[in-house]
Image (spheres, rainbow, N blue to C red):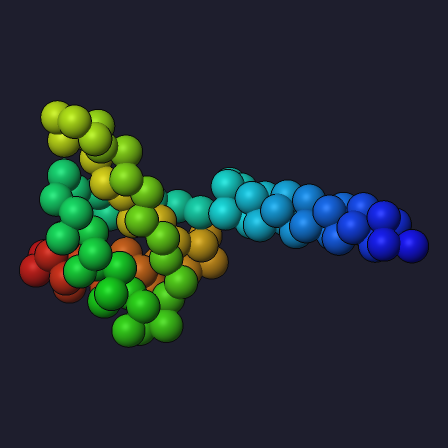
Amino acid sequence: MAQNNSFLFWLKNLWLKRKFKAYFMSDNWVSIFSTNQLYEAEMAKDMLADNSIECVIMNKQDSTYHFGEIEVLVPFAEVLKAKHLIQEFKGE
């Protein structure tokens, strides 16, 4: 019986991991802001979170030489509101 429970636990965890990956790696996320400074991306993320917009940071920078972009992504349904807030954040 214990062996059966551990298999079911493993199967449930595998299912949850796939659902989690599908949620965050789907095409429903849009990049609305990019920078080469992590603190700017964190500030944008905090501002969006303060306005109840779910967002994530995707750091595409090389870890040694720090070239590349850091992107802030939001769900597709929140793009217009988020872009408006980002424009205010950047002072445009």
